[in-house]
Amino acid sequence: MALTSTQRPTREGPLLVLALALVGAVCIPLWQWSLELDAGGGQWSNWTPERLRRLLLGPEQIASYFCFTWASFIIGGRYLELRRQRRAFSLDLLPTEEGRRILPEDARPLLRKVEHITAQGGPYVLANMIRLALNKYATSRSSLDVSETVRTQAEVDLGRLVTSMATVHYLAWAIPALGFLGTVRGLAGSLSVAGHTDAELHQFIQDATRHLNVAFDCTLIALVLSLVLMFLVHSVQRDEEALVIDAQQYCLEHLVNRLYDPETLAAEAETDGAGVAAARVS
Image 1: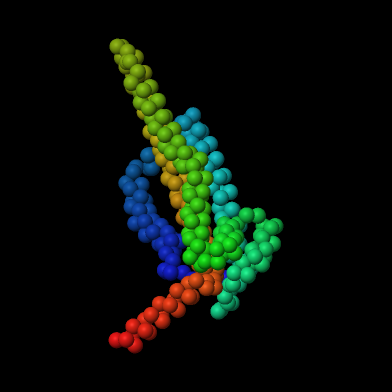
Image 2: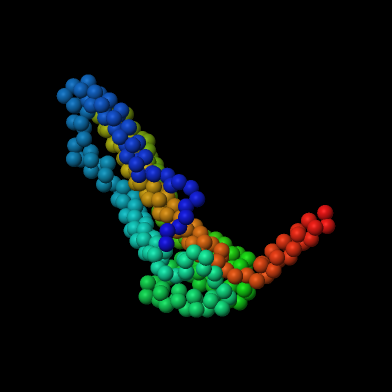
């Protein structure tokens, strides 16, 4: 059952393609033009295999790769779990016929139906929210209590999802920290005490340059990996929050708004009767 959207979705994919096309159309010709100005492309002569090895395969870079790979595995597992959770919306958990009302005596049969359908598929956020709401309705027979239960459970699920991302957030912070650690190590090596002879001074300049390369290489690799990882974290967290919000909306549309609440109906009838009496007196 498709949920009713309250706003038009932002087409981020087409906008991403448009942004890449626009930036590429401007930057690639400028880059090619600058290469033509360079005599014979001599700027690439410094990128020897040894220089690439120092750029990509330092101790801090390898540690950053490990953190990035570990976090990517965790995010991949959460993405697969999100796809599994989304399948719950296609299950026949609640009646969706127009005008169908849910009576207090219908709560237990619906609860058994939900448990039977989801018994083999594993736990679902949506099914758990429906189960708690039906249990509350069977005992209190109040739609207000059911609505409060749905809202509270949605907050609990959101908090649980945020808490379970603690390891990924730590790894996302650890990657640039490792890069800065390599920067400090490289800067410390470049500040070695220089000799007094010309040969020692020349060797000092070479060592300082090498250590500065280490410093900036570590930072470059770590920041690139951190940017990619933070984008993945943002995408998964956004989809997880959307899952909980959609589950809450599903319960509001197909459960809370269909509940038969005698107390609420009696209160509305008394309010309408008082309004009619006041109108007659006036």
